[in-house]
Length: 161
Image (tube, rainbow, N blue to C red):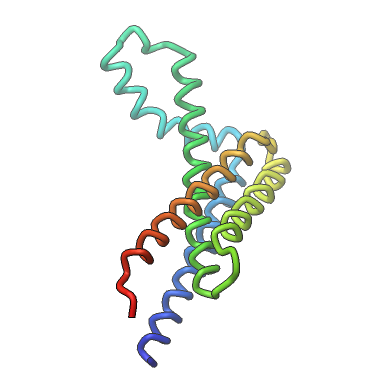
């Protein structure tokens, strides 16, 4: 029993560290100016853009392609950042035995998304965007739903004592 308690304590500590680190990373990324954020996104956009240009050289100077890739990279980042945050939040809610842990984890992550957008409002060249908040919430909801499905399936497969 003592070993089980020790593992539980370590799991809780790890989840708290991951949750706080994820929140800090989101906050720090949002603190970048618009120019810094664009430079960072452009580094990621460069890879798929190069592949597309290799296959279709006539698209090399296509501004619409750049806009679509930039949008895809930025919104995917929102979904993934807040999906990860929801995983840690749901994990903590489950470990503490809270009611509605999946809803709580998703709601917590969505609230952090709202706080993050408000924070961006005060960053030079940035703005609070409702669409970003929607992508944050989508990521949180998808992660919570996937966790619910996986845990439900695992519980159904577990042998009863």
